[in-house]
Length: 221
Length: 261
Image (cartoon, rainbow over the protein chains, first blue to last red):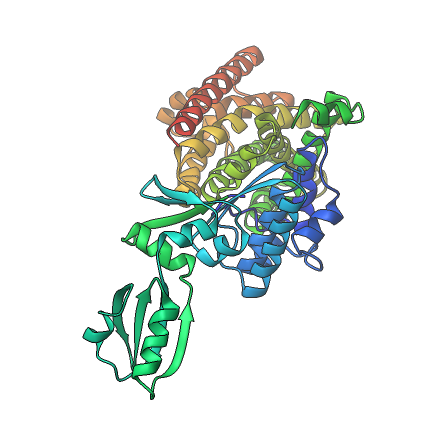
């Protein structure tokens, strides 16, 4: 599946699938393709009349016509609504469960996080790191503590394992390895402390920490 | 696909598989050309409209027969240049060609579909013109003349398909319509598609034999006995030469741009 392919707008979805199926000696049944790519009810629609997300789904359908063992998806969810995106994720999981390898590039790190068994982070054409999503998350040490407190930022920075203190509107965000200990200490010292949240870093934070510039691209398998 | 997977397949003949691809490719190419109204209406519409204007006003004259053949050639050239030249140029720009090349589709199937479909358009135009010549033009057309004209139309599609192909690899998609018109209109005028070559300015008459359109026109006109002096074999040789050169050039340029990409 190519990132920006546009197919002739005057052919119907059914016709495109029929055409692409003919290229393969053992294609998937057309019905199966329509089901997997969630194109039910759109079969007789001209490609030009499809919305952005529907087009992506149609292109995904064309990519799996040949019942491939290895599927390359280049930013397949670009322009999809949330529902279609989740539906496509389900299908990627189903492909993977059926023993097929899926190589998917994406800018949405959430996507890499929920789908991938192995993530490769590429920045300016070089592999920065690779591993499971949790491996990569672990590269950024510590968890985040967000709360509204009267404690002084300078003091907070002296608490054990705290590596970073930042202000976020009315609250502060601490990054600490031993989050439980830090929170215990803060609760003891500040009875007015409120809005407490403890967050595990998302893949996105790991990603930002790893690339540290914005000219970057996630790439995962 | 692994060797075991191939062994598991029912023995489908390679021939049946390739034939199927060609058939589907041609079928959908034709459907596509037909549905692109800007193409189908203008390519079929112009020769018919011109015949209704100029053929009808020259009713029962030799000119009514002449235009039947010459507008048919115009149909061949415009169907090939616009259908193939503009078609491929657009599909390259859109990424459709790239997507197809990522599939196991044979390149030749794509090309064959374009040539067959534009020849089909040329055929429709020629048949319509013969029917108009008999009815509106009041011309006498013998069955053998009609069959031969159709034959020239179909064979003539090949050299102009090559020209279309060459245009498609040279011209970017957004300027293709303009450039094709710039090639096609002067060429069809100078080759006697609008009026006999003998009525053109003298300098044009000397230039005309260098154009492939001239030789196509002469082949068609020789069927109804209205050609300039000249050998049929010369016309065929010139067209064959043009075909080889233009296909070759298009092939080289295309492969070079592929290698760059």
